[in-house]
Length: 64
Image 1 (cartoon, rainbow, N blue to C red):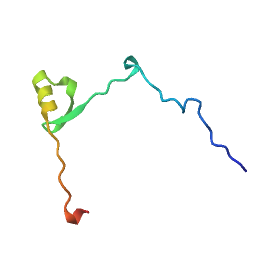
Image 2: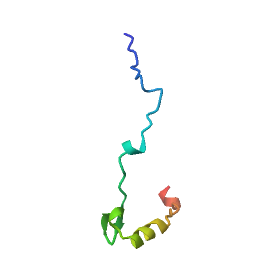
Image 3: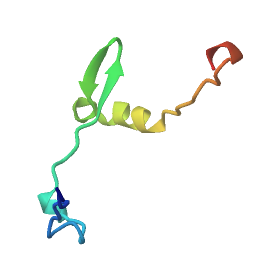
Image 4: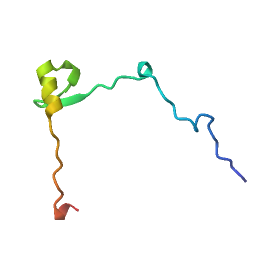
């Protein structure tokens, strides 16, 4: 029994969306123990959010 793999006609060309067709992504962050959307922040809090720095703690030898 020979089962052919289905091919899609649009698989060769990637879909490119216009900016007007894209769905906006809402960013949420944790503030004072609860989650809030970034869009609800005042301009000062939004600035603080964009100035945040992120870090990664190195793994210990026991955790590897």
